[in-house]
Length: 148
Image (cartoon, rainbow, N blue to C red; front, side, top):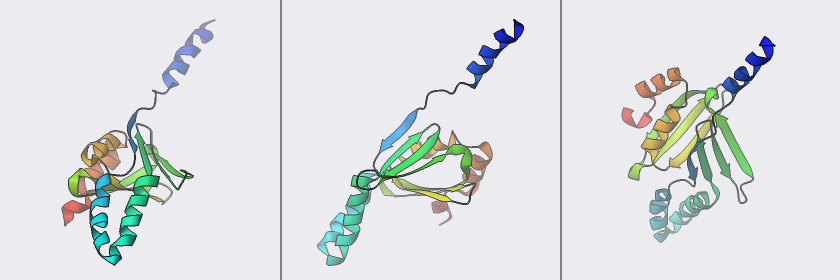
């Protein structure tokens, strides 16, 4: 009888907290400003089209367990990372409070997110879910923009 009473608490301890979404939506709209203005030149049409396409088709989802990037016309392409796979982070701040994040993973892959809105809050949320050694490394030299 004693074994049965100890099994349920062990299962309860293994239960995961519900997944909490920090951000879900497109890249920052500010990435479209300069390319849209550059349409005045013939050369500017291609960058403007690319920026507006990202705005229409790319969606980020940052939660307390994972980061997912969905893209493609119908959201057919999906890439996802879980925080335990991250071994290094590099970032660059952009204008208007946006920024880029690059995650280096255990398997050697790179995972990029461009023009993340509310960048300062987003990176702090992500760092709160990442291994402490990775956070310490990031805080010492991960923001590439600070070196310039």
